[in-house]
Image (tube, rainbow, N blue to C red; front, side, top):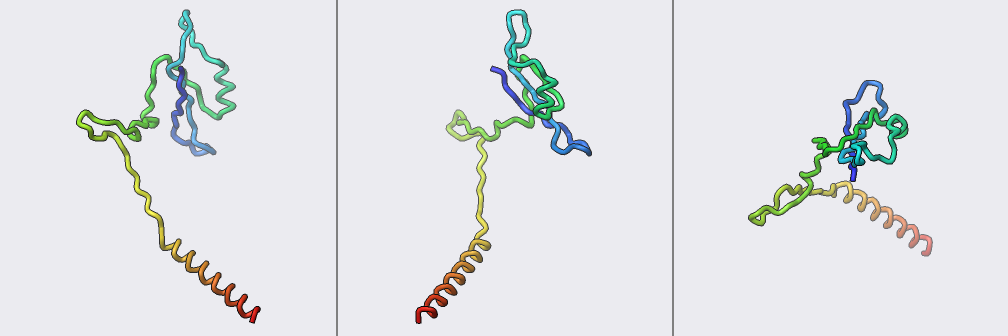
Length: 119
């Protein structure tokens, strides 16, 4: 089954968004060796999706920028984990603390006003 990949190109001075090329690899061929694709209107496809070009290959094309193997985790022969990435996210409690204190002061003020009305 064919794969779709995006190859980002360097941005030009007048580009509104990052230019890219659509890369289709592992494309199937018929017995005559012709590529079998649902559409061969690559110019129309480029215009519709904003690509600079569409490149089609029978072979597997590896685009280094699309390499996600660093995110995969596999077990090595000795039982160790190879290629895993760990990310630690630490919250900013200072802003949270300030917001909680503001809400407490607001609630206390409303309580005092309510008690004064009832008295």
